[in-house]
Length: 262
Length: 263
Image 1 (tube, rainbow over the protein chains, first blue to last red):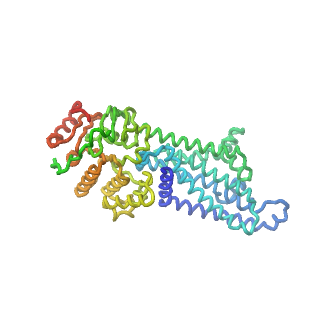
Image 2: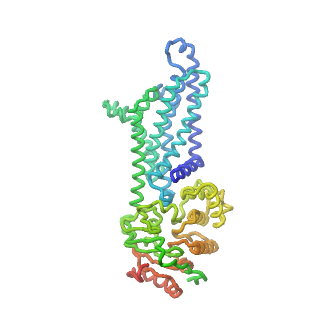
Image 3: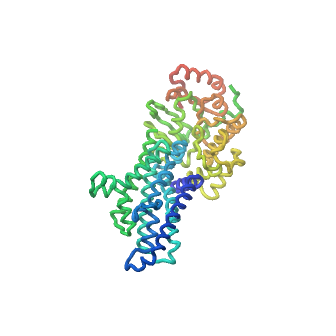
């Protein structure tokens, strides 16, 4: 009973704060702009593309690139959802625990008999619910033209799964950073730094002349890229589940230690 | 010193056969590099009102945080209704209502939403939750503020909302940390009335304060903490009320050694 109560409380707090609405409005407007630009480019070349046997279609040139830059390169286009998530998630998660600590309401939650796991999971699921709604609203853009095109549903489903897992992982990292930080702004900065590091650790390593399997395995982008291309492998799924579980376990441990040490 | 009201200290302990609702045994806790609470042993029966007195930094808030379940003791045990609190932290949900110092609130929620959130965290739902919310709003005279955001409440209103949240699920143990903070004299009188009503209904109340008149006005027993240790504990009859102030200053200024046997 208590974890849903924490989740409901956190969702309510998210939805009455202007920050969540401002982030949703700005990012959806930006993604809509990106979608329109991609669609315009697709329509301009539609005839040429139709002449190519097995050439890329609406899914490869509009639907998937709306979700991420990874398949198209950044070029002159605005960010896709995956890149925006690196900025949005830290802002959404920064107050989950650091804000409670600053308010003095964290001990109040503990005094209702809630375990650290119930507090962390309740807050995490609330943020995740907001992020999944954000993903669905973004997907609604390419799907709104599904009746007039022939989307590759399998590829789209794999990409959606990949993005949902990436959002879940970034949210877990954000909640963990909020558990460790003394102030929400510190939590946001920490979460952004960890998210960016995980995102492009392989690119940084490649620039430094290091290119090996371990570094590539560590990078979130390499796992997400496979899923965005429609390749679902258990190794990629395991990476997301593992990082999410480790981040949430760290957050729970931090709260337990805080209750013990005061 | 304010003269005690007619029913001050009238909270009668239940029959001796009933186990104490709250039992602290050798409780200790280090905080911020010093021993905040040390070897604290106390018990509280249903219907009793215990005043925890002490100067700032005496260990009152740390003690109440441990009783409320927000802080784990380093040593010693807390037994709630005969059960070990460390083994059954879920007891807090049903048995304890806690008003922390300065009544922490979620600034972005309304008064009504606060009560609903606290009710859900305590396991209330549906009609029972709405009934408890409305009763708390009426009892603390918060009805007119029900839709106001907590962030814009005055300090006194915040304190009343914090108390309403603590009382919402009618817990058998009320833990109140400086409950009269920022309340005006009329509100203080209402607070005392509520505390007496809760005790008369069988709840045990432990309230901390550094204001002697708060203790003499409502408490049936008093415990004085100094530098984390219990220096004095006694039932409070009329003679003691007159002497309490002198005793308190003796302990606060001279660090007197433990007085009457702890209850």
